[in-house]
Image (cartoon, rainbow, N blue to C red; front, side, top):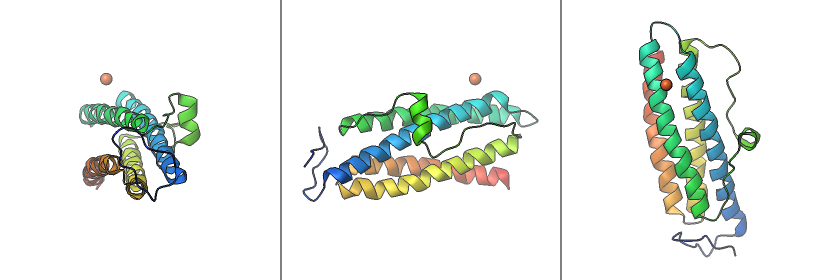
Amino acid sequence: MKELINNVTINNRSSDFIVEKLQKFLDKQVANLSVLFTKLHHHHWYVKGEKFFTLHELFEKYYDEINEYYDEFAERLLTIGGNPTSNLKGYLEITSLGEVNETLSAKEMVKMIHDDFMLIINELKQGIVIAQDVNDEVSADLFISTSAALEKHAWMLRFYLD
Ligand SMILES: [Fe+2]
């Protein structure tokens, strides 16, 4: 059995397959967060209209936060013996998110970020189960706290869009 390194609890029932599944899951989230970080910059730079000042600042606040998760997820993956993807080509191969390839209105940008947050939240819920399967409560906790923060943002964006 492959052992998770450092302080991660070993679950006797865990198999290499499940540990690799968790590592793969974390790597996908690193890719998702990297793509989202870039998209938020796009929106920060290109948003126009009467809500410019509000949204320009909001997107900046989000990309700063996403940047922290990006680093945290990658370092968690290293901690449990995995190797995070660290180049843009690699991210685009494994991310669940699409890139921005069109001109969007301010409202469309907000909707896109809302939908990306929801997609990541839904994946994180699956990740909680995958982490708990190998008794990796630290990774599960990371997924729970990240999805809690993103759920709150998604709720606010829904109210904005109403
Ligand atoms: Fe800026």
